[in-house]
Image (cartoon, rainbow, N blue to C red; front, side, top):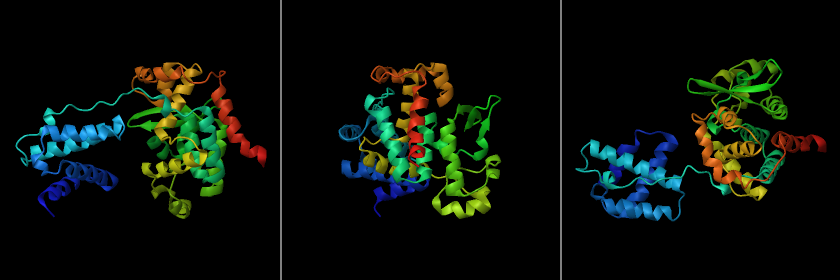
Length: 311
């Protein structure tokens, strides 16, 4: 192992799993591009690499790679492996906060996606995407939902308590979505109603199902990387662009805003710290199709109930 690879390996040991692989890959790609020893890198080398990245990567990805490389060089400088940090002279690339139109699935695309998931994928995969699409919760939040997080209010509205740090918020769950989750509990997990009172994770690995019926309290939730290949395959089968869980969350916010939801209601639903975040959607809302009030609920209800009608 030469000195450059040793510097990389020494640095990435502070990370674990996928994060370690990501940092190693990006630093090694940079090393291959500059074709010089890492301690000898200069401002123009970094700027040249960022320029090349911008030709084939999104602004957000370029910003992430910049951060990974800058963090690596900060550590080299702090540990006196280099006499000066070339990243001090490089302007950080900016990624627009504005959501782009092509990153927002239309109702028609959502219908095609959900139909494919329902008919050709597992009930777990369908339930997860349906939950994110209809509530706008984050993927990480969805993965960490437990059965005891669901509740009925005084008016028999079904709700979900979503935790983010020490802060809780509450989102409404469509009855039809709850029916899908109940089917998943009964038909896939094969556990009784007693689980609904327990702090057991809902979305788990197929390999953990048998143990879940006996030792549910020690079963961990799925990782965030699990959903991406599911969406890649489902979007391909549905013949729509590749959408991520974040895109589904954006779609929930924008369609709701178009239908007349207030910024305060969206802020509560999506768990934003600042209601001004809604400004990121201004350029897209005008292009969304017109719909009647409460259309979102009736639309998803129709999609979900298609299967029942066929049976």
